[in-house]
Length: 446
Image 1 (tube, helix red, strand yellow):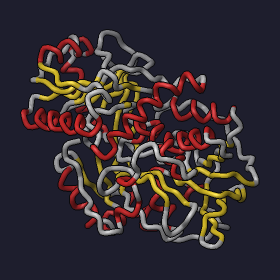
Image 2 (cartoon, one colour; image 1 turned 90 degrees about the vertical axis):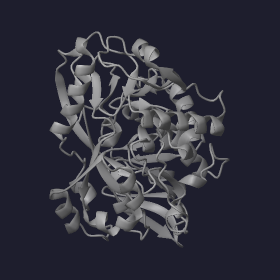
Image 3 (tube, one colour; image 1 turned 135 degrees about the vertical axis):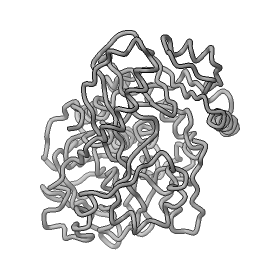
Image 4 (tube, helix red, strand yellow; image 1 turned 120 degrees about the horizontal axis):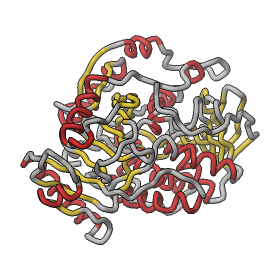
């Protein structure tokens, strides 16, 4: 079972219309709804299960600019600025804590990649936009008190932060509801209706909502949902496993990552721990349909990605690729994706973590879980309008970065919907990059 998520009460009372309907109640969906509301637009958010039920509550909880892909680096800076204001402006508690994030290694090649990233980041944003610095062995020991393992060095960003994935999106959703935004749960959207080729309504399991625009922020479900409109979105899923410990004293307060483990201190006093950057990919029919678009991604992830075939292949093989909107859909039958964690994998990270910090040797595992990360061929998101369906917008494919850059992505999405000057240049995030002949590249340095 996934982690316990803060409650957003059920509500299925649909408005007859809204300026914008947002499909998906994860961090991207609620952040988009917040930004749209701040622009004075009426908004309805439709979530088929419960708010933050999938990857938005299952991630590490990092809010970072460190090691972001250069194409999303400026967006991550803007998002961190918004994180700083959320609790105060909305009167909520997301668990936001500016703890700093540290990347360390004993591998000279990895350290050189850290230095190369820092050089490029400074060229993009300038020295004053962020506070990442290179650190040596002595400073690493200061940042990781009690560590038995020593590291040659790394990079550290004091301004990076953490927040609580089980609290953040629900807190934003509840604040929006108090402001009059419709947060509809459980409310599966079956599809989008068009008039004159333009998005004009969403059809839900409870009825229809007329609208001027639709934002599809469905995370792992977005490719499948868009396919019913003939919108081709290349997106595959990887399964990431993490665990949390019982509360304990004596460990480091900054968040850190190396090749063997990653961790952050939790607001409840425990730790969230993962096995570095490693994930699993379940083979599915889409794995074969999209194989050639993901060749470069596969090359870049060799050694960090384990591929296997299982029940999910046959479940997705049986799903219809088109469906009528007047009948029940898979979105009503599968309210929450809740994959099993890969226990040996995540426990290996936990073992390395406790060996590195002998004072935490008595740490007890409270829970393990997994979630599906939506990944694009170039590992950066789609934040874009859809040319073939005016009034339809997509925010997905955050490739494991969505929690941290969610508020910034929501602001950018709202800018595009409302035809405002964008928060950052959206060119790199356009959907058409996968079909207009652009070269799709993986940045191996992030």
